[in-house]
Length: 137
Image (cartoon, rainbow, N blue to C red; front, top):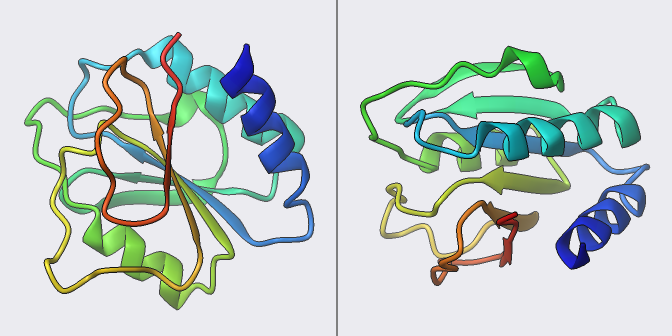
């Protein structure tokens, strides 16, 4: 329960911030129940969170809702468009649910907002910037 408490506290402490939750939808081989539960947590605790669904492009940006995620099957992911969108929209904190195997432009070495990679896997890879949090059940 450690990561759940950490995540809840992180969401609660950002009530006055502009927050987005991105979900890597490049594959359907993910723990969908776990991901839906995280989305529901955001929906309950911070309902003004933006939900960004993306694979190699942004598929949708909408208010956070757990039952709206549509997964792809091609396995190709790029984070750059979401990271740039967050910058343009002046997002204060971006949470990104992903296995961190997607593409990021080489010259993108940092972002100007808080960045948390929520990794639904036992393996916690090195992230290019921000902080990685293992959320495997």
